[in-house]
Image 1 (spheres, one colour):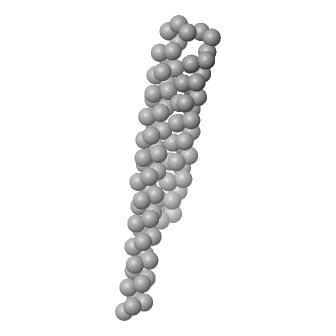
Image 2 (image 1 turned 60 degrees about the vertical axis):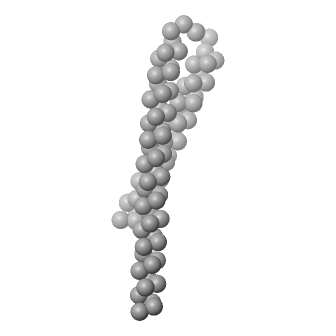
Image 3 (image 1 turned 90 degrees about the horizontal axis):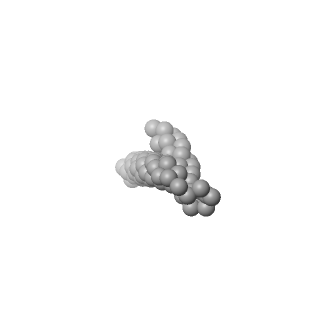
Length: 85
């Protein structure tokens, strides 16, 4: 079970970083593009969706990291309890 949450943590943090970085890249592209007509609405929509998806995946990764830490602490506590008994 510990490996499952570790894998999800790594995958979710990578996906979250990709989405967040792509949203920042879309914002920079829209700011420095030569065409400034109604094209910015399209790029704003893409950047908002990518940024929110990135935050969602980063939050999910944080939850899985907390689960991994709690499971590790519980396992260590069980080992120390067995030694003291």
